[in-house]
Image 1 (cartoon, rainbow, N blue to C red):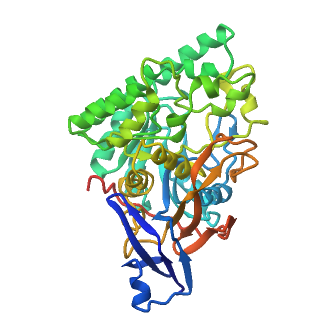
Image 2 (cartoon, rainbow, N blue to C red; image 1 turned 90 degrees about the vertical axis):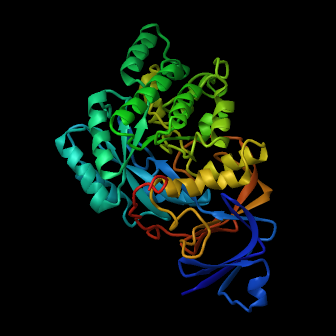
Image 3 (spheres, helix red, strand yellow; image 1 turned 180 degrees about the horizontal axis):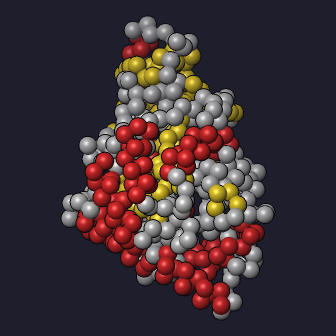
Length: 474
Protein backbone atom coordinates (compact mmCIF):
# COMPACT_ATOMS: atom_id res chain seq x y z
CA UNK A 1 0.00 0.00 0.00
CA UNK A 2 1.24 3.49 -0.83
CA UNK A 3 2.32 5.64 2.09
CA UNK A 4 1.84 9.41 2.23
CA UNK A 5 3.33 11.80 4.76
CA UNK A 6 1.82 15.26 5.29
CA UNK A 7 4.40 17.28 7.17
CA UNK A 8 5.04 20.75 8.60
CA UNK A 9 1.33 21.58 8.83
CA UNK A 10 -0.99 22.49 11.70
CA UNK A 11 -3.56 19.76 12.36
CA UNK A 12 -6.90 21.23 13.48
CA UNK A 13 -9.55 19.30 15.42
CA UNK A 14 -12.63 20.55 17.31
CA UNK A 15 -10.52 20.68 20.46
CA UNK A 16 -7.46 22.51 19.25
CA UNK A 17 -4.60 22.86 16.80
CA UNK A 18 -1.30 21.00 16.91
CA UNK A 19 1.93 21.10 14.91
CA UNK A 20 1.81 17.51 13.71
CA UNK A 21 2.81 15.35 10.78
CA UNK A 22 0.25 12.85 9.46
CA UNK A 23 1.23 9.42 8.13
CA UNK A 24 -1.18 7.65 5.81
CA UNK A 25 -0.88 4.01 4.76
CA UNK A 26 -3.20 3.13 1.90
CA UNK A 27 -6.64 4.55 2.73
CA UNK A 28 -6.10 5.03 6.46
CA UNK A 29 -4.35 7.42 8.83
CA UNK A 30 -1.88 5.30 10.79
CA UNK A 31 0.07 7.77 12.91
CA UNK A 32 0.40 11.36 14.06
CA UNK A 33 3.84 12.66 14.97
CA UNK A 34 5.01 15.82 16.65
CA UNK A 35 6.35 18.07 13.93
CA UNK A 36 9.74 16.81 12.75
CA UNK A 37 9.48 13.56 14.71
CA UNK A 38 8.70 11.48 11.61
CA UNK A 39 11.94 12.65 9.98
CA UNK A 40 13.89 12.07 13.18
CA UNK A 41 12.54 8.50 13.34
CA UNK A 42 13.39 7.85 9.70
CA UNK A 43 9.76 7.39 8.62
CA UNK A 44 9.60 6.94 4.86
CA UNK A 45 6.73 7.55 2.46
CA UNK A 46 6.03 7.21 -1.25
CA UNK A 47 4.65 10.74 -1.35
CA UNK A 48 5.42 13.71 0.88
CA UNK A 49 3.08 16.72 1.04
CA UNK A 50 4.66 19.83 2.54
CA UNK A 51 1.94 21.69 4.45
CA UNK A 52 4.18 24.42 5.86
CA UNK A 53 2.06 27.42 6.86
CA UNK A 54 -1.15 25.51 6.16
CA UNK A 55 -3.96 23.90 8.13
CA UNK A 56 -4.50 20.15 7.90
CA UNK A 57 -8.16 19.47 8.63
CA UNK A 58 -10.60 16.57 8.22
CA UNK A 59 -12.27 16.45 4.82
CA UNK A 60 -15.58 18.28 4.82
CA UNK A 61 -18.81 16.31 5.21
CA UNK A 62 -21.91 17.79 3.58
CA UNK A 63 -24.89 15.98 5.09
CA UNK A 64 -27.55 17.65 2.93
CA UNK A 65 -27.27 17.39 -0.86
CA UNK A 66 -29.70 16.71 -3.69
CA UNK A 67 -27.96 15.25 -6.73
CA UNK A 68 -30.28 14.53 -9.68
CA UNK A 69 -33.36 15.38 -7.60
CA UNK A 70 -36.58 15.61 -9.65
CA UNK A 71 -38.35 18.82 -8.62
CA UNK A 72 -40.85 21.25 -10.10
CA UNK A 73 -41.05 19.64 -13.52
CA UNK A 74 -37.27 19.43 -13.92
CA UNK A 75 -34.28 17.94 -12.06
CA UNK A 76 -31.19 19.18 -10.23
CA UNK A 77 -28.43 19.46 -12.82
CA UNK A 78 -25.54 17.97 -10.88
CA UNK A 79 -25.16 14.24 -11.36
CA UNK A 80 -23.42 12.19 -8.72
CA UNK A 81 -20.32 12.44 -10.90
CA UNK A 82 -20.31 16.20 -11.47
CA UNK A 83 -21.59 16.97 -7.97
CA UNK A 84 -18.99 14.89 -6.14
CA UNK A 85 -16.17 16.25 -8.31
CA UNK A 86 -17.32 19.79 -7.47
CA UNK A 87 -17.48 18.77 -3.80
CA UNK A 88 -13.90 17.51 -3.93
CA UNK A 89 -12.80 20.84 -5.44
CA UNK A 90 -14.24 22.42 -2.30
CA UNK A 91 -12.49 20.17 0.21
CA UNK A 92 -15.53 17.96 0.79
CA UNK A 93 -14.77 14.23 0.98
CA UNK A 94 -18.18 12.79 1.95
CA UNK A 95 -21.73 13.73 1.02
CA UNK A 96 -25.00 12.40 2.43
CA UNK A 97 -27.59 12.71 -0.31
CA UNK A 98 -31.36 12.51 -0.03
CA UNK A 99 -32.83 9.34 -1.56
CA UNK A 100 -36.42 9.95 -2.59
CA UNK A 101 -39.81 8.38 -2.00
CA UNK A 102 -42.86 10.39 -3.11
CA UNK A 103 -46.57 9.76 -2.65
CA UNK A 104 -47.61 6.30 -3.80
CA UNK A 105 -44.03 5.15 -4.26
CA UNK A 106 -42.13 2.38 -2.51
CA UNK A 107 -39.41 3.41 -0.05
CA UNK A 108 -37.04 0.54 -0.86
CA UNK A 109 -37.42 1.10 -4.60
CA UNK A 110 -36.65 4.79 -4.01
CA UNK A 111 -33.43 3.89 -2.20
CA UNK A 112 -32.51 1.36 -4.90
CA UNK A 113 -32.92 4.09 -7.54
CA UNK A 114 -30.49 6.32 -5.64
CA UNK A 115 -27.97 3.48 -5.41
CA UNK A 116 -28.33 3.07 -9.18
CA UNK A 117 -27.68 6.76 -9.79
CA UNK A 118 -24.70 6.98 -7.44
CA UNK A 119 -23.05 3.58 -7.77
CA UNK A 120 -19.77 3.74 -9.68
CA UNK A 121 -20.20 7.47 -10.35
CA UNK A 122 -18.98 9.23 -7.21
CA UNK A 123 -15.53 10.76 -6.90
CA UNK A 124 -15.78 10.87 -3.08
CA UNK A 125 -17.57 8.73 -0.49
CA UNK A 126 -21.31 8.99 -0.13
CA UNK A 127 -24.20 7.92 2.07
CA UNK A 128 -27.96 8.42 2.01
CA UNK A 129 -30.78 9.81 4.07
CA UNK A 130 -34.24 8.66 2.98
CA UNK A 131 -36.97 11.16 2.15
CA UNK A 132 -40.35 9.75 3.18
CA UNK A 133 -42.90 11.62 1.08
CA UNK A 134 -45.76 9.18 1.60
CA UNK A 135 -46.14 7.85 5.13
CA UNK A 136 -48.23 4.66 5.22
CA UNK A 137 -47.99 1.25 6.89
CA UNK A 138 -45.45 -0.07 4.39
CA UNK A 139 -43.29 3.05 4.60
CA UNK A 140 -43.17 2.74 8.40
CA UNK A 141 -42.01 -0.89 8.11
CA UNK A 142 -39.46 0.11 5.49
CA UNK A 143 -37.98 2.74 7.81
CA UNK A 144 -36.96 0.03 10.27
CA UNK A 145 -35.72 -2.23 7.46
CA UNK A 146 -33.45 0.55 6.19
CA UNK A 147 -32.06 1.17 9.68
CA UNK A 148 -31.41 -2.54 10.27
CA UNK A 149 -30.11 -3.57 6.86
CA UNK A 150 -29.18 -0.64 4.62
CA UNK A 151 -27.17 1.72 6.82
CA UNK A 152 -29.79 4.45 6.33
CA UNK A 153 -30.54 5.78 9.82
CA UNK A 154 -32.14 9.16 9.15
CA UNK A 155 -35.41 10.10 7.46
CA UNK A 156 -36.42 13.45 6.06
CA UNK A 157 -40.04 14.56 6.34
CA UNK A 158 -41.71 17.68 4.96
CA UNK A 159 -44.16 20.08 6.54
CA UNK A 160 -43.94 22.01 3.24
CA UNK A 161 -44.90 21.28 -0.40
CA UNK A 162 -48.49 19.99 -0.13
CA UNK A 163 -49.22 17.53 -2.91
CA UNK A 164 -45.55 16.70 -3.43
CA UNK A 165 -43.73 15.71 -0.20
CA UNK A 166 -46.01 17.08 2.53
CA UNK A 167 -46.93 14.99 5.58
CA UNK A 168 -49.62 16.00 8.04
CA UNK A 169 -49.10 16.04 11.80
CA UNK A 170 -50.59 12.59 12.29
CA UNK A 171 -48.30 11.04 9.70
CA UNK A 172 -45.30 12.83 11.18
CA UNK A 173 -46.18 11.57 14.65
CA UNK A 174 -46.38 7.98 13.40
CA UNK A 175 -43.01 8.26 11.66
CA UNK A 176 -41.52 9.74 14.83
CA UNK A 177 -42.96 6.90 16.92
CA UNK A 178 -41.33 4.44 14.52
CA UNK A 179 -38.03 6.31 14.85
CA UNK A 180 -38.37 6.17 18.64
CA UNK A 181 -38.42 2.37 18.31
CA UNK A 182 -35.58 1.92 15.82
CA UNK A 183 -33.29 4.74 16.98
CA UNK A 184 -33.36 6.75 13.75
CA UNK A 185 -33.04 10.51 13.39
CA UNK A 186 -35.99 12.43 11.97
CA UNK A 187 -34.94 15.33 9.75
CA UNK A 188 -37.59 17.99 9.24
CA UNK A 189 -38.21 20.59 6.58
CA UNK A 190 -40.08 22.89 8.95
CA UNK A 191 -42.28 25.39 7.12
CA UNK A 192 -46.08 25.57 7.32
CA UNK A 193 -46.77 24.54 3.73
CA UNK A 194 -50.58 24.76 4.01
CA UNK A 195 -50.48 28.40 5.10
CA UNK A 196 -47.70 29.23 2.62
CA UNK A 197 -49.82 27.97 -0.27
CA UNK A 198 -52.58 30.42 0.70
CA UNK A 199 -50.12 33.32 0.77
CA UNK A 200 -48.57 32.30 -2.55
CA UNK A 201 -51.96 32.36 -4.28
CA UNK A 202 -52.76 35.75 -2.75
CA UNK A 203 -49.49 37.30 -4.00
CA UNK A 204 -50.01 35.88 -7.48
CA UNK A 205 -53.62 37.12 -7.56
CA UNK A 206 -52.31 40.64 -6.88
CA UNK A 207 -49.88 40.33 -9.78
CA UNK A 208 -46.88 40.17 -7.44
CA UNK A 209 -44.97 37.55 -9.40
CA UNK A 210 -41.27 38.51 -9.10
CA UNK A 211 -38.75 36.23 -7.33
CA UNK A 212 -38.67 38.41 -4.19
CA UNK A 213 -42.25 37.40 -3.43
CA UNK A 214 -41.00 33.86 -2.90
CA UNK A 215 -39.57 35.13 0.39
CA UNK A 216 -42.53 37.34 1.31
CA UNK A 217 -44.90 34.38 0.85
CA UNK A 218 -42.83 32.19 3.20
CA UNK A 219 -42.49 34.42 6.31
CA UNK A 220 -40.10 33.44 9.06
CA UNK A 221 -43.04 33.20 11.46
CA UNK A 222 -44.23 30.12 9.57
CA UNK A 223 -40.78 28.55 9.83
CA UNK A 224 -40.77 29.22 13.57
CA UNK A 225 -44.31 27.84 13.97
CA UNK A 226 -43.50 24.64 12.07
CA UNK A 227 -40.27 24.16 14.01
CA UNK A 228 -42.21 24.48 17.27
CA UNK A 229 -44.81 21.98 16.06
CA UNK A 230 -42.12 19.49 14.99
CA UNK A 231 -40.50 19.78 18.42
CA UNK A 232 -43.83 19.19 20.19
CA UNK A 233 -44.53 16.11 18.05
CA UNK A 234 -41.03 14.72 18.73
CA UNK A 235 -41.65 15.21 22.45
CA UNK A 236 -45.01 13.42 22.25
CA UNK A 237 -43.28 10.57 20.40
CA UNK A 238 -40.87 10.12 23.32
CA UNK A 239 -38.10 12.69 22.85
CA UNK A 240 -37.26 11.17 19.45
CA UNK A 241 -34.10 12.66 17.88
CA UNK A 242 -35.13 15.59 15.67
CA UNK A 243 -32.88 17.50 13.28
CA UNK A 244 -34.25 20.68 11.71
CA UNK A 245 -32.73 21.11 8.25
CA UNK A 246 -31.65 24.32 6.46
CA UNK A 247 -32.66 26.76 9.20
CA UNK A 248 -32.92 30.33 7.90
CA UNK A 249 -34.49 32.39 10.65
CA UNK A 250 -34.19 33.58 14.24
CA UNK A 251 -37.79 32.50 14.94
CA UNK A 252 -36.93 28.85 14.31
CA UNK A 253 -33.59 29.07 16.08
CA UNK A 254 -35.29 30.36 19.24
CA UNK A 255 -37.56 27.30 19.24
CA UNK A 256 -34.58 24.95 18.96
CA UNK A 257 -32.69 26.79 21.70
CA UNK A 258 -35.70 26.52 24.01
CA UNK A 259 -36.04 22.79 23.29
CA UNK A 260 -32.36 22.21 24.00
CA UNK A 261 -32.66 24.17 27.24
CA UNK A 262 -35.43 21.74 28.17
CA UNK A 263 -33.08 18.82 27.51
CA UNK A 264 -34.75 17.55 24.33
CA UNK A 265 -32.89 15.72 21.55
CA UNK A 266 -33.36 18.57 19.09
CA UNK A 267 -30.62 19.66 16.69
CA UNK A 268 -30.38 21.95 13.69
CA UNK A 269 -28.29 22.94 10.71
CA UNK A 270 -28.02 26.10 8.67
CA UNK A 271 -26.52 26.83 5.24
CA UNK A 272 -24.14 29.49 3.90
CA UNK A 273 -26.89 31.35 2.01
CA UNK A 274 -28.69 32.08 5.29
CA UNK A 275 -25.50 33.46 6.85
CA UNK A 276 -24.56 35.84 4.03
CA UNK A 277 -27.41 36.57 1.61
CA UNK A 278 -30.41 38.90 1.96
CA UNK A 279 -33.74 39.35 0.20
CA UNK A 280 -32.83 42.92 -0.73
CA UNK A 281 -29.37 42.18 -2.14
CA UNK A 282 -30.16 38.91 -3.90
CA UNK A 283 -33.81 37.90 -4.37
CA UNK A 284 -34.87 41.46 -5.21
CA UNK A 285 -32.33 41.99 -7.99
CA UNK A 286 -33.71 43.64 -11.14
CA UNK A 287 -35.72 41.65 -13.65
CA UNK A 288 -35.61 37.91 -13.13
CA UNK A 289 -32.07 37.84 -11.71
CA UNK A 290 -33.35 37.05 -8.21
CA UNK A 291 -34.50 33.61 -9.39
CA UNK A 292 -30.91 32.41 -8.93
CA UNK A 293 -31.43 32.72 -5.18
CA UNK A 294 -34.83 31.05 -4.82
CA UNK A 295 -34.56 28.26 -2.25
CA UNK A 296 -36.74 27.08 0.63
CA UNK A 297 -36.78 28.29 3.31
CA UNK A 298 -36.08 31.58 1.55
CA UNK A 299 -33.33 34.14 1.90
CA UNK A 300 -34.51 36.54 4.62
CA UNK A 301 -34.85 40.32 4.68
CA UNK A 302 -32.22 42.46 6.39
CA UNK A 303 -35.06 44.71 7.61
CA UNK A 304 -36.89 42.06 9.66
CA UNK A 305 -37.26 42.78 13.37
CA UNK A 306 -34.87 39.84 13.85
CA UNK A 307 -31.22 40.06 12.82
CA UNK A 308 -31.22 36.63 11.20
CA UNK A 309 -27.55 36.62 10.12
CA UNK A 310 -26.22 37.68 13.52
CA UNK A 311 -28.54 35.27 15.33
CA UNK A 312 -27.51 32.30 13.16
CA UNK A 313 -23.80 33.02 13.64
CA UNK A 314 -24.45 33.28 17.37
CA UNK A 315 -26.34 29.97 17.19
CA UNK A 316 -23.26 28.39 15.63
CA UNK A 317 -21.02 29.74 18.39
CA UNK A 318 -23.42 28.52 21.10
CA UNK A 319 -23.95 25.07 19.53
CA UNK A 320 -27.66 25.75 19.12
CA UNK A 321 -26.83 25.08 15.47
CA UNK A 322 -24.73 21.93 15.26
CA UNK A 323 -23.90 21.69 11.57
CA UNK A 324 -23.52 23.72 8.39
CA UNK A 325 -24.61 21.94 5.23
CA UNK A 326 -25.54 23.30 1.79
CA UNK A 327 -28.90 21.85 0.72
CA UNK A 328 -27.08 21.69 -2.64
CA UNK A 329 -29.82 21.51 -5.26
CA UNK A 330 -28.57 23.26 -8.41
CA UNK A 331 -30.69 24.45 -11.33
CA UNK A 332 -29.65 26.38 -14.41
CA UNK A 333 -31.28 29.71 -15.20
CA UNK A 334 -31.95 28.70 -18.78
CA UNK A 335 -34.87 26.26 -19.18
CA UNK A 336 -35.05 25.60 -15.42
CA UNK A 337 -35.27 28.69 -13.20
CA UNK A 338 -36.95 30.34 -16.21
CA UNK A 339 -39.94 28.03 -15.69
CA UNK A 340 -40.97 30.65 -13.13
CA UNK A 341 -40.94 33.70 -15.41
CA UNK A 342 -44.11 35.57 -14.49
CA UNK A 343 -44.86 33.23 -11.56
CA UNK A 344 -42.36 32.93 -8.71
CA UNK A 345 -44.05 29.76 -7.43
CA UNK A 346 -42.89 27.89 -10.54
CA UNK A 347 -39.18 28.65 -10.00
CA UNK A 348 -37.41 25.40 -9.02
CA UNK A 349 -36.29 25.81 -5.41
CA UNK A 350 -32.57 25.34 -4.95
CA UNK A 351 -29.06 26.72 -5.16
CA UNK A 352 -25.67 25.16 -5.84
CA UNK A 353 -23.22 25.27 -2.96
CA UNK A 354 -21.49 21.92 -2.35
CA UNK A 355 -18.21 23.29 -3.74
CA UNK A 356 -18.08 26.41 -1.60
CA UNK A 357 -19.21 25.58 1.94
CA UNK A 358 -15.74 25.05 3.43
CA UNK A 359 -14.56 28.28 1.78
CA UNK A 360 -17.54 30.39 2.78
CA UNK A 361 -17.59 29.23 6.40
CA UNK A 362 -13.83 29.75 6.71
CA UNK A 363 -14.59 33.36 5.87
CA UNK A 364 -16.65 33.36 9.07
CA UNK A 365 -13.45 32.43 10.91
CA UNK A 366 -11.61 35.33 9.25
CA UNK A 367 -14.45 37.69 10.23
CA UNK A 368 -14.34 36.51 13.84
CA UNK A 369 -17.80 34.89 13.82
CA UNK A 370 -16.51 31.40 14.76
CA UNK A 371 -13.18 29.83 15.68
CA UNK A 372 -11.01 27.70 13.42
CA UNK A 373 -11.87 24.71 15.61
CA UNK A 374 -15.59 25.42 15.28
CA UNK A 375 -15.18 25.53 11.48
CA UNK A 376 -13.85 21.97 11.61
CA UNK A 377 -16.49 20.90 14.12
CA UNK A 378 -19.54 22.20 12.20
CA UNK A 379 -18.31 21.18 8.75
CA UNK A 380 -16.70 17.79 9.45
CA UNK A 381 -16.66 16.31 12.96
CA UNK A 382 -20.23 16.91 14.11
CA UNK A 383 -21.71 15.84 10.74
CA UNK A 384 -19.85 12.53 11.16
CA UNK A 385 -21.03 12.09 14.76
CA UNK A 386 -24.60 13.25 14.16
CA UNK A 387 -25.08 10.81 11.30
CA UNK A 388 -23.22 7.70 12.41
CA UNK A 389 -19.90 7.90 10.54
CA UNK A 390 -17.47 8.74 13.37
CA UNK A 391 -14.54 8.09 13.81
CA UNK A 392 -14.24 6.60 10.33
CA UNK A 393 -14.95 10.12 9.12
CA UNK A 394 -14.68 13.62 10.55
CA UNK A 395 -11.40 13.50 12.48
CA UNK A 396 -7.68 13.20 11.81
CA UNK A 397 -6.73 10.28 14.04
CA UNK A 398 -5.05 6.88 13.69
CA UNK A 399 -7.54 4.38 12.25
CA UNK A 400 -9.70 7.01 10.59
CA UNK A 401 -10.13 7.24 6.83
CA UNK A 402 -7.49 9.48 5.28
CA UNK A 403 -10.02 12.12 4.21
CA UNK A 404 -7.99 15.30 4.52
CA UNK A 405 -8.11 18.92 3.37
CA UNK A 406 -4.90 20.93 3.34
CA UNK A 407 -6.04 24.56 3.58
CA UNK A 408 -3.86 27.54 2.73
CA UNK A 409 -4.84 30.58 4.84
CA UNK A 410 -2.43 32.86 2.96
CA UNK A 411 -4.11 32.61 -0.45
CA UNK A 412 -7.44 33.93 -1.71
CA UNK A 413 -10.32 32.28 -3.59
CA UNK A 414 -12.50 34.20 -5.99
CA UNK A 415 -15.80 32.45 -6.67
CA UNK A 416 -17.63 32.94 -9.96
CA UNK A 417 -18.65 31.30 -13.21
CA UNK A 418 -15.33 32.37 -14.78
CA UNK A 419 -13.32 31.96 -11.58
CA UNK A 420 -13.72 28.97 -9.23
CA UNK A 421 -16.81 27.05 -10.34
CA UNK A 422 -17.09 23.32 -11.06
CA UNK A 423 -20.79 22.66 -10.46
CA UNK A 424 -23.00 21.82 -13.41
CA UNK A 425 -24.86 25.16 -13.46
CA UNK A 426 -24.86 28.02 -15.97
CA UNK A 427 -24.26 30.57 -13.20
CA UNK A 428 -22.69 30.79 -9.75
CA UNK A 429 -24.85 31.41 -6.70
CA UNK A 430 -21.77 33.04 -5.16
CA UNK A 431 -20.60 35.16 -8.11
CA UNK A 432 -17.95 37.67 -7.09
CA UNK A 433 -17.57 36.43 -3.51
CA UNK A 434 -13.93 36.43 -2.42
CA UNK A 435 -12.61 34.24 0.40
CA UNK A 436 -9.44 34.75 2.44
CA UNK A 437 -8.07 31.22 2.12
CA UNK A 438 -7.85 28.45 -0.45
CA UNK A 439 -8.25 24.71 -0.91
CA UNK A 440 -4.68 23.49 -1.44
CA UNK A 441 -4.76 19.68 -1.48
CA UNK A 442 -7.60 17.20 -0.92
CA UNK A 443 -7.26 13.51 -0.14
CA UNK A 444 -10.14 11.02 -0.21
CA UNK A 445 -9.25 7.77 1.59
CA UNK A 446 -5.58 8.46 0.96
CA UNK A 447 -5.94 9.26 -2.72
CA UNK A 448 -5.03 12.77 -3.79
CA UNK A 449 -8.11 14.11 -5.61
CA UNK A 450 -7.23 17.82 -5.82
CA UNK A 451 -3.69 19.19 -6.05
CA UNK A 452 -2.00 22.15 -7.73
CA UNK A 453 -5.33 23.56 -8.93
CA UNK A 454 -6.18 20.41 -10.84
CA UNK A 455 -8.53 17.47 -10.27
CA UNK A 456 -6.62 14.19 -9.88
CA UNK A 457 -9.49 11.97 -8.77
CA UNK A 458 -11.85 9.79 -10.76
CA UNK A 459 -15.48 8.80 -10.77
CA UNK A 460 -16.06 5.47 -9.11
CA UNK A 461 -13.47 6.06 -6.36
CA UNK A 462 -16.22 6.99 -3.91
CA UNK A 463 -17.62 4.21 -1.73
CA UNK A 464 -21.06 3.88 -0.18
CA UNK A 465 -20.91 4.39 3.60
CA UNK A 466 -23.33 2.35 5.68
CA UNK A 467 -24.11 4.57 8.64
CA UNK A 468 -24.82 3.61 12.25
CA UNK A 469 -27.23 5.44 14.55
CA UNK A 470 -26.43 8.98 15.60
CA UNK A 471 -23.36 8.98 17.82
CA UNK A 472 -24.39 12.32 19.23
CA UNK A 473 -26.83 10.36 21.36
CA UNK A 474 -25.58 6.80 21.59
